[in-house]
Image 1 (cartoon, one colour):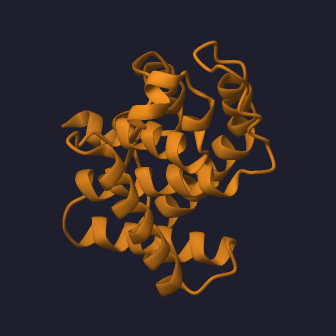
Image 2: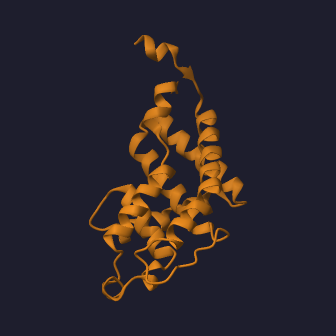
Length: 178
């Protein structure tokens, strides 16, 4: 109980600002590493040549995955309000209407759910979404190319890489309270 008292209290607006700035920072700083890891992965027959300037799909995958996690973890009015503020700030960053951004995120959610069947794990959905959005199947050996499925070794490497793009809410709420 005393630990809750010692935590710094933040408003929903402050949490949403910290989250949006943090997500953009990790995407901007990390995507080049993701490109390098994909391009140099030994499971490919030829290098995919994913370019750092092709960040758009990756950013939307990371944003969508984090919103999925927020919806899972946040409850009640405070959670709904925080998610709404996050979406408004993201929309402003993309110079989009909030409704337009929510629709785009919904499309990515559906895509990620579809490529991730039967799993419901957000991290796996991220890895499979990257695999499909960057058309990595074209660069696999014949067997995996024919079955149109990521090589499990590649998928594991993507999982290990992409876990760093999921916001650590557990750690965040050890320091802060709403």
